[in-house]
Image (cartoon, rainbow, N blue to C red):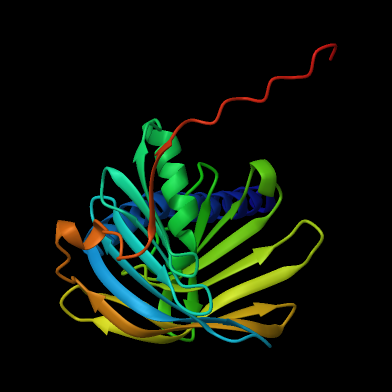
Length: 267
């Protein structure tokens, strides 16, 4: 009887520990979601400039300006100098090599417009300036990191075209500053982007990356270096409305929803 009581007590203790851990994970994820939203609100305006370089290639310079809500302007430097901008109602494309300037009006529904802007400006926005998109099945746990005694690991498996790809973010706790992002493909291939230098703002109580290293299979394959970081930059509306330089071919076009491809007759 005594042994049975001891066994019951042991099972109760184990069950209690497991339940406590599960409860902590269940409350941690909402805290992370709320914290990421609060951090995104702090980054309501900024201006950055820097270089992106892959091993063995020349660095490419870029600049990016952002102001909420939904004002974006990105410029790629030599050798292909071009600028893209969205001023809230129009999209501008300036190609300097071709001396071409195009103004696009939009007839896209909000979801498609958001996807278009995300795809266009994603290359200009380093990790740490964009908020991780959390899926419904994301999991989070406490962790540590060389740059943060307290951190959280946010893990999720992607769906759709990237189905099976596992992505893990490591974020400083509780500020949720980006520290690294690891990916693992279904076949086992691994890649990582990690912070090597930071720029911290005491007033905003957050840090953003100044240098990001990219690694694949344990080898360094590239880096992003920010030479200019202005958080809270004053960016007026007209900073995102471009005008054509003299001598450029000026065109006006419309962004329209893509229509589904009609299958050929006879199947």
